[in-house]
Image 1: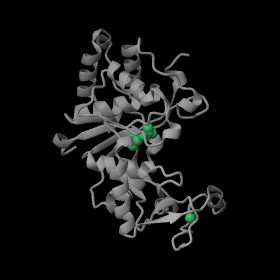
Image 2: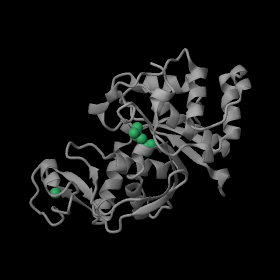
Image 3: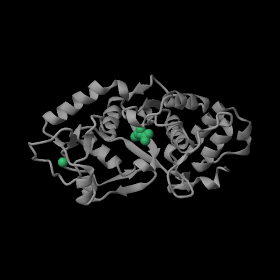
Image 4: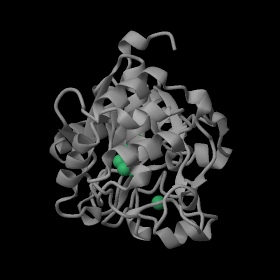
Amino acid sequence: MSNSQHYRGRFAPSPSGDLHFGSLVAALGSFLDARHHHGQWLVRIEDIDPPREVAGATKSILTTLECFGLNWDLDITYQSQRHQFYQDKLNSIIKGNRAYGCDCTRKMIMQSGGLYQGHCLSNNNLSDPHSIRFKNLSGIVEFNDRLQGLTQVGNAFANEDFILKRKDGLFAYQLVVVLDDIEQNITDIVRGCDLLEVSTRQMTLYQYFNHLPVRYLHLPLIVNDAGLKLSKQNYAKALDLTQVKATLLLALDYLGQEVSLQHQDYSVEALLIEAAKNWNISQIPSGPLNTKKIISN
Ligand code: GLU
Ligand code: ZN
């Protein structure tokens, strides 16, 4: 990587529950990649969706990161405090004639094949409530992921006029994640593969904002027996804070990083320094990994 001096990564959890093993792996991968490149690593709490938030989750996520030695640089940012910034940017997109209102229902979109077809592009008679969609003139169809390699999405997906602000008045993740990553000068995003395809939408917004896109590295997901991503919804367990080192060693193993036996004697801090030094992305498996192999429960 050429500009490692300017590396700045981030971990951007939504406070919809405690960190579980899957989200720890993503945080650890992002942290180690940043530290390996002598870069900064920021934490941003993506609390833009109150109905999905769980009381106390933010505090618990931050405490867990601290316990695992994943110390961040600079102040934490909270998306819930940035509504005015998002609205100003959205207004400028609307003013530039690159966004428009849409009152289509999910049912209508499903009936027309699952992707929105531009139905409201020239609708001057919107009912309330309505969402705001991006007028997508040149969708990105492919990009090179540092781990997943050439990643391609279908034309229809790439060119969909996706939502910037939801019908319920909440800002869409796609918009705010890009606004914040640009504003915070993020150069590298390391996160789970569940966000691989939507990276193309985020790149489309980077292009709209005349900003060079970031580098992406999408880590394999940790899945349960049924092949589902670990998440609060499928009852992934919160991390055991009395088992920090053992869990870190497991996460490193999962990421394909060699952990010599002597590491067992290291402190958490020393283990992370060593892991950052030896961080080697060519050893990370690209496909999903089943927890059954690695977590006995
Ligand atoms: N807040 C998003 C999530 O928790 C992740 C955002 C990102 O890494 O781009 O799924
Ligand atoms: Zn519509």
